[in-house]
Length: 219
Image (cartoon, rainbow, N blue to C red; front, side, top):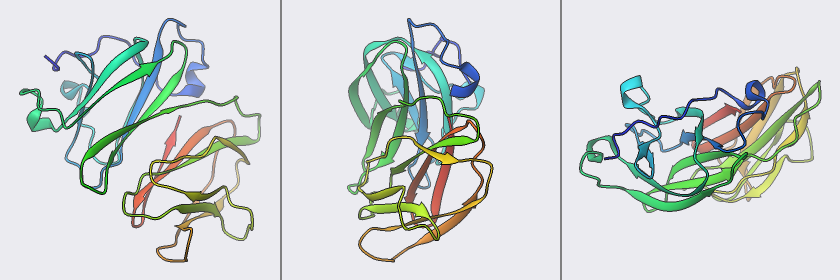
């Protein structure tokens, strides 16, 4: 039954853990980027990744913080909440988790309105004081490639980034407010901006799933 609750302990974020957790396990977090989603159940093999009894309904825009998982090949399945008891998975794929590594799972909706899960390895070197690390991922199935940058600066942080694609983590001066810009690469259509102050030594992923919707994950 997928309703078994995963028994491995949780972690909060990368900077708190410091990478010193047991090398015998991997760590995984997940983001539900499906617009207007009423919730998703994720399961690795027969263990449920989000605990509904603990209120982890995993609605649109919600993040499941890092939790330890057994390494190796694991069967990932996704269910709508009403389909969990009948084993009616809307997505299934075997994923590999390496011991000692961190991963983020991005749950998205394809242009065909199907559920898909993208596995991304969170690889980085801890930022120095006064710096933050920022990564950008395009989770908008209706978008062309996207640009991500800072207003007034010619160089982009991400250029021509297709759906389901992401950048590496990039160092940025921290503790100052920026006006960030997300737009279609081939035009100024649907350009939108937001102001944000990255904090020193923090690690972030900026994501968008379309329209004026964006989010910031603190790893």
